[in-house]
Amino acid sequence: MIRPRLPTPQHTTGPFFPAEFLESWESDLTAEPGGCGGGSDSDAGRAPRGELMVLAGRVVDGVGEPAVNLILELWQADSSGIFNHPGDPRYQERDPRFRGWGRAATESQGRYRFVTVKPGPAPSGVDPGWVRPPHLAVMLLGSGLMRPLITQLFFPGEPLNVTDRQLQEIVRPERRARLVLRRAGTDAQTGAQIYEMDFVLQGKAETPFLAG
Amino acid sequence: MKRSRQTAARRPTPAGEAGQPARAIPGYLRSLRRTPRNEFVRRLWTAADLLGPARVVDPAPPRACDLSRLRPAAPRAMGQLIRVTGRVLDQAGRPLRGVLLELWQANAAGKYLHPNDPSPVPTDPHFAGRGRMLTGADGGFELLTIKPGGYAVPYEGEHSASDWWRPPHIHFSLFGPAFASRLVTQMYFPGEPLNRYDLLLNSILDHAARRRLIARFARTASTPDGVLGFRHDFVLGGPSQTPWEERP
Image (cartoon, rainbow over all chains, first blue to last red; front, side, top):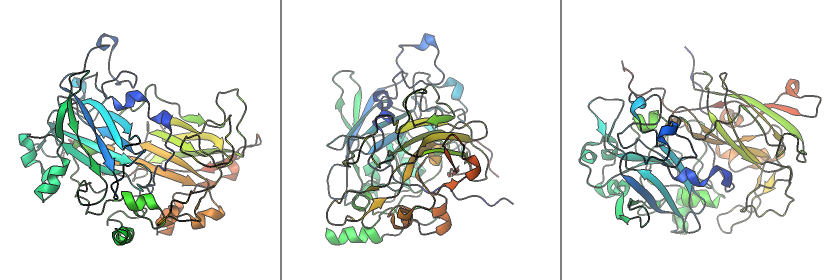
């Protein structure tokens, strides 16, 4: 039997994560320059399927100060609940105009902003009886974070939230509510629905984060 | 407030994460203020964790990366030229192909190409400082660069160490096959006196685990054109399970 190796230890990104790795298209999961890996020329200029949305908010630390220069990585299914990965059985039917992954950094007030589409409900992939509600997987990296902080965000009023085992793993309803996005009007330019999420790294209103 | 911050510093690393660093490190102010205090929520592995972004950048970067100059024929940066070769493996030791590595580091004097770096030491106009590469079919990569310098970490007041120097290190960010296998880490150099005192490296209590962050000097990989060789492998974690497979 092969003894499994331990993974390489994680470390912080430190404060000097290169700006070149935060190109402007990265925070827009519907933008072209990143390449979708599957789109053909005939797809060029077409809007992605589904409901365009903005994910925005702030990150604050344990003393209530904005967490500046923090990196957020967003990973999610498309509007049909398909992940942009060959391991998804419906990969061939995915939206070629949607990258499914993006990255943004917080500015001097701790604010961040993504443009994306609202994901559809997606099979859990581990239990045919478990369909996950629309959700966004988010990873926070940055100075002071020795390990990535991982969590999942949910949409208000989704019936599948009530039976989602991952969300319900959080026992106290007021803690669970901290992972549910807030509707906050529409974007003046695009008309996209804005969903807000403030991440509190530490303290009374601390955001629930997932282990491992 | 002061008392609770100290509590955070004593908080143990969650169990089941052998060989990982502490999250809250005394003397590292930002880790004390940014580390959550509540219990982490049990993670139920589903498609979002078990799959990951297949392509982060386009076009795909090459297997080899040269940070020691801005363009192929351009003048070299100052400092000791080094070549770091290695492989990215899964926990069973299988090579992982197509893993994106992002890397960045200080120049030979210990200064980053970053507006936030307050260090008074010189910049180097010939040094690229950051780059991307993609592992080949053998899981391998090859990095040509200069050895980074150490630097003093600025003192930030109470709860901040006043005599902290970072040893020479290179930052790596790796995108594995799953969202759950994402790795952000740093590579250190063998025999550096500062390694003994570094708050980050030594927050890993296990000696063998610390050693996994230190590259090996490879005399046989050092070449007469003035390049010192180092070897360094990465092991990506995450669940061994893949979604949609039949489970026993």
